[in-house]
Amino acid sequence: MGHHAPSREESNVSAAKVQEPRRTRSARALIIGGLLAAVATGPVVAHAQDDPARPDSAGLRVTGVVRHPGELSHEQLTALPQKTLTVSYHTAHGIEIRTESGPLLSDVLPATALAATTAKNGLLAFAMLAIGSDGYAAAIAYGEVAPHITNQSVIVALTEDGKPLSTPRLIVPADSAGGRDVRDLVEIHVVRLTT
Image (cartoon, rainbow, N blue to C red):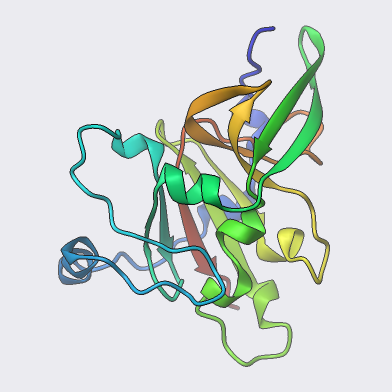
């Protein structure tokens, strides 16, 4: 079965144009400097290492307004609880059905990992920009995946139809055309939307 490549028009998400201030070079140097402390209730986030045995693309960077920016390795992603979904998409060639498995996005980036405030329903002001290695990007509001709000089963797929993926893939099963599926997912950039 051929892979469905979502059209760029299908993923025209206005939130993708939200801009955050760039991190300074000194802040970037601190991130590269060593291992970051992990959020106690979330996954362990480690820095990218120069490991020739594992390509950098196999990991997933977490950046933006999070408590501990860094990188999750493939091993760390597979250590999280895995969810299997059967997804179907409307394509130019008809309906395509795939089986995707991987951790929930809400487990990869739990609420405790966000640099949240004490404002009422403060998590609803956060959005995540999923970025592929080719620059393709799609935005998801944190409220779409938060377990206590809508709890959609958005996953970071590590296998497809029982076969390992070389790089993670964001899967948004509620999207009928797969416009927010991001192949070769390399980064999740978190922003806080303000008025």
